[in-house]
Image (tube, rainbow, N blue to C red; front, top):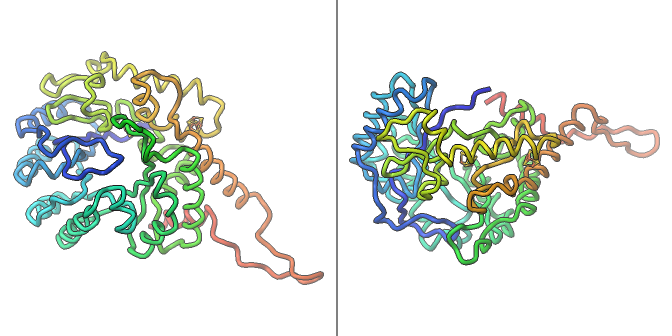
Length: 385
Ligand code: SF4
Ligand code: SF4
């Protein structure tokens, strides 16, 4: 199955927020010019012929300003009309203005934003005032008909408050998508905020239980994706497919990288849009070869794992960036992936082939307890959406 084609445009690496576990640069960091957007369009025109999703990511992409999007969106959508482009945006929403929101609404752009739970917990790890500024942007977005979904980053500190965080999402009616904080590559204490793989695995199992307890009242997107992986035997998010070659990111100066996570790391530049490279040209770069070497490594190292088809060794960035481009293992979150994939598989097998959920009352009496919702209920809920 061919993975969808995804281009990430990084208009700047700058960000006005200073989240403790993040690596973005100063607000004044260079911004992409409209000339570069034209070069992106000219390059993509002939690069591939399948449908493309274009996500504006950062840094903080809204720092590019309303004028950038007013020009960039028509250039991309008209120039690439034959690829039926759809757009998305990942932003903390601080700089969203009604004017920008109207431009995004015109192009039906869904927004992914970030909130790590209730204000106190969020601001502890993302900085004072973050929650309020994001919520102000959220109001502007929804007033203009934009759809916003939040990603919640769990750190080794916030995981202690997982119940409060889950209840926050439940009560606010926001779907929950979570992300584990990674060890920072630019900090003196890389693990200060990182969520250890074992703790991440336990968190996923905890959220699976909470999801089942509250089915229909909250949506946990990661659990949906994990269940879908097992049911379809194919990954449905980039972490669980061979992303190499199907996802590409373009930095502010037009440099092409394997993914937004590598942007700003010169050793991962594969080419530049101004040179209009073909896939064969990019394949000659060291970064492309490294990404494909990781794929071959996964085929060997994970060959015996029952989850290889829909895990594919996890995220190559997680595996190779911390070791300076040396492949010494798969994604360190393997422990978490195995834990949750095993749990879902066992429960699903039990539901499909195990004994019915029946309780014996006293001797001779048989009272049937109402079956608790299980993995099949999650799959059914997804199917009826
Ligand atoms: S490197 Fe990781 S985050 Fe980037 S596209 Fe691949 S799996 Fe996704
Ligand atoms: S769970 Fe671990 S061993 Fe299995 S495929 Fe994923 S990364 Fe490889």
